[in-house]
Amino acid sequence: EEMKNNLKTYDQNKKMINIGAIAPMPIIGLKYIFNNLYPQTQITDNMITDESLLLKGLDNNEYSVIVLSHPIEDKKYICSAFFEEKLYLSLPLNHPMTSLKDISFEKLNGTSVLLRSKLGYWRELKEKVIPNSVLIFQEDEIILNELIRSSSLPSFRTDISLQRLKEPENRTYIPFINKEAHVQFYIIYKRKDKQLFEQLKAEIKNLDWSKT
Image 1: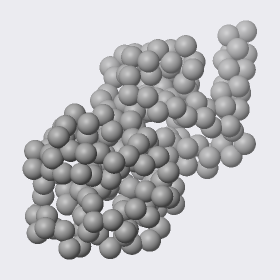
Image 2 (image 1 turned 180 degrees about the horizontal axis):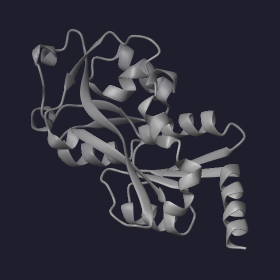
Image 3 (image 1 turned 90 degrees about the vertical axis):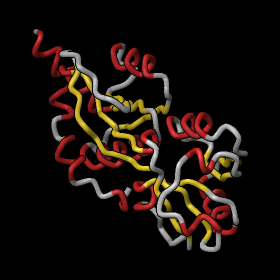
């Protein structure tokens, strides 16, 4: 009877996978993987930065899988490294800062910057570490990309988002040296769902961000 219930739950889970994550790129990567693994499955997602809500949602089946910025040590979960994301400052080619090999948040603080509004962890970080900067938010990614190409203002990219660019921006990208600008993401799901997600490790290893 228990095996039947487990198989029933497994079958239901394959019909819908709910992703909860603290940043956009983990969602983009997982949706791409799951759409390839389970093309008939409905994939939903929610980006929130409150770790307690993500774990609670995982426990009460609101989420099938969540992504955090640190590992979880709990026997009821399986936790695997996903990918590392590194933050860069994006500058027009004629900007005075393009001569720098790297940059810190302290040096950037006070400078006006263009950025996406829905960035989860990255938005909270930027609001915290450059409090004196004017942050110009744009929700529409297409409009933001056009603004970046035509504006003299700095913006942000990550090594992952750069791999997804469809056309060159004619910009220089300078890495941040701050520890907070380098984030390792971890995938967490219930041990009882191991059968559903056992192919994740291989898919993560072979993930081509340019196709996502």
